[in-house]
Image (cartoon, rainbow, N blue to C red; front, side):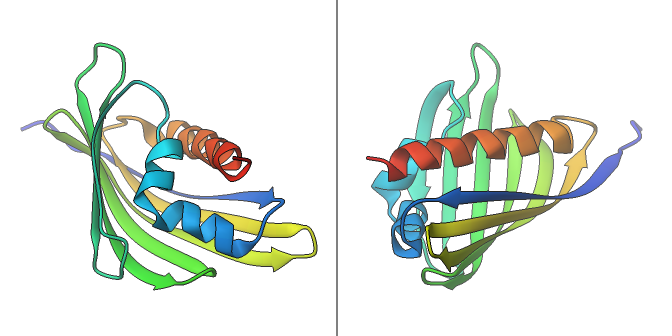
Length: 150
């Protein structure tokens, strides 16, 4: 039997956006808006979203000629314009590579919104690992800035 390994990690990303918490929240809550920014490249696949506590989201994609990747999310807690808490797993082909809980906090400021993204993850068999995942989320939150500038 192949020995399994798990790397546990928590990281926090803080971003400021020059727009209201309502607009930032809408970019997470509206499927059309989220599908525009929630992609790190590669070939887009299916995207399904039921944005409510207990609701599910599923996104599939392929990076270059690699195997299909899939993200399956369940929303745990949603406080409009303030907080989104979700759990998600990522799979590469038929292999689950991670399981995480993430929290998005939106704080109104004089200049717009401070977003605090916290992820607590379990990364399996060294698949992508916390450093690559954090870099991926930083890229996504940069794409969110472009979406908000539309």
